[in-house]
Amino acid sequence: MKIIILGAGQVGGTLAENLVGENNDITIIDTNGERLRSLQDKFDLRVVQGHASHPRVLREAGADDADMLVAVTSSDETNMVACQVAYSLFNTPNRIARIRSPDYVRDAEKLFHSDAVPIDHLIAPEQLVIDNIYRLIEYPGALQVVNFAEGKVSLAVVKAYYGGPLVGNALSTMREHMPHIDTRVAAIFRHDRPIRPQGSTIVEAGDEVFFIAASQHIRAVMSELQRLEKPYKRIMLVGGGNIGAGLARRLEKDYSVKLIERDQQRAAELAEKLQNTIVFFGDASDQELLAEEHIDQVDLFIAVTNDDEANIMSAMLAKRMGAKKVMVLIQRKAYVDLVQGSVIDIAISPQQATISALLSHVRKADIVGVSSLRRGVAEAIEAVAHGDESTSRVVGRVIDEIKLPPGTIIGAVVRGNDVMIANDNLRIEQGDHVIMFLTDKKYISDVERLFQPSPFFL
Image (cartoon, rainbow, N blue to C red; front, side):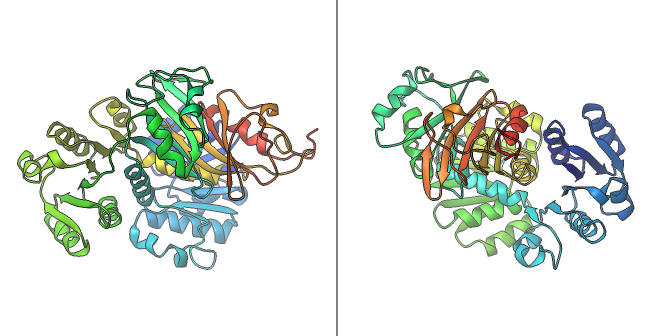
């Protein structure tokens, strides 16, 4: 597939890295020549220096015969204009754009369609982050929760702790503990190395366990791996930007929410707009302020400012002063790696959320859902089985007969409204949604080929 990526920043560069090894012809456009040279030195791709929305630049990048344009520059307006130019001048069939401003996102249905601004798929990073954090609040103790098949199935990542009935026991004993609940452990990471789970695998404290289950059973399975945490009640947010304000608006109906904002005018605006959130003007690294607001009684402290260092430091301070759990928004990948295993309980990467959403639209047509996991090393994907026994490598076959790439596990199959946790004898049918986990994303091309029907397949 011939893909043009507009913007060589962290998201554009990471997207190119994901796609360039999958038999795609990638061209990336940016005004920053140094960034482009760096990407060209690392990967097999073309680069064009110039303004991403200019017709001449797009023509030079090969927009005349491109299959897809992905606009992820730092400017919403540039991304929108580039999609319009690609549609009007070059008839580029697929156009994806990252749009950050809530003013645009709020009216997305009216703004973004072929008769207005021709964007096929809109990626709104702030909303993705809010959704991600909200899911983690719904499941206290989870490190990551990803929904598939319109929310029918979830993949959850949980650290195993002493106190969970399964810890110290073989995976096969889970059926004895939960005879009426089906789940599939897709992977275990121990000391950062993947272990292919077998029935005889002993779960150890500290293991990072990835499991797939019907969404209504996630809490029950979590209780096997750790003592279930009490639901959060008191939440303190730091940062009143788009994410902080959106999160407060979503949480304030069900939780006791306090928000700290260091800009006085913004704090005053939020105090008027938010109904049940207590807004403070101040600095979250101010020990006196945190003490006055009873930080030691806070169940969850969430720092979502635009400053990585401020988020990390305020969260570390809050944890030291008694906050039960702390979560931080981190833009820089190096910082995300750095805080793993520290007093920071959960690090949220908007880039990873954006990449997952982009890959869901950029992968081959049979791949309808993608989630980037473990800081981009692993992936969970949702693929739709098409074809019949004569044209498909999966349709009409039981799972045990399907030649899966190394490190790939089928976790669940969704057929209509029925969720079936995978077993070796489960037969795949036309139209099934198959949820898989890959411990190494380099095999994604093999999975894509596996699900592509071919008239020449025997």
